[in-house]
Structure formats: structure tokens, C-alpha cells
Length: 92
Image (cartoon, rainbow, N blue to C red; front, side, top):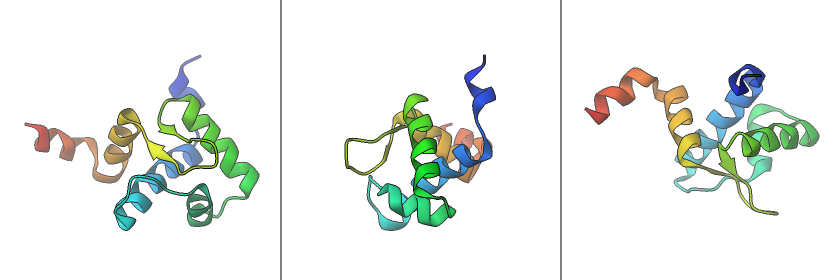
């Protein structure tokens, strides 16, 4: 099964929220509770989504720590927020 096929809208929303909250607060890590509140998720659903993103290699979540985007997660989140065409222009 293709890994992309398992992605749900909530996974993309969570990834985007981690990026946006980190940008707003000008820091690398974001508390899981902040993302859950931003998206209106129950704690159990938030943890399930977070575990999916960890398994997909998009974020790291140290025990009792803040969520941080990996390089791949950062790239995907930037594409979600700014669009891939904007990233192409900035690289060239």
C-alpha cells in the first residue's frame, strides 16, 4: 500500500499547524496540546495523528517533549502553506 494513500486531511492539517504555530512563536518545537487546541482535537485523536506523523518521518516527538518537524516534514509543511510553485521560485 502506498504510504500517501493512508494520509487523511487531519494529518495534513496537523503538519501545517505544527509549522504555523512554530512560525508564529518563532521557535522550533510546539507542544502537542497547542496543536490539539488549534485543530479542536481530543487528546487521544491528537496522539494518534502525531504517532502517524512520527512513523511517516515528518516529525520527531521526544518523550514528554515538543513536536519538531524533520527536514522532510518542514518541506511538506512549507509546500502546504506556501505552495510548491513558490518554493521552486525561491530555490532557482
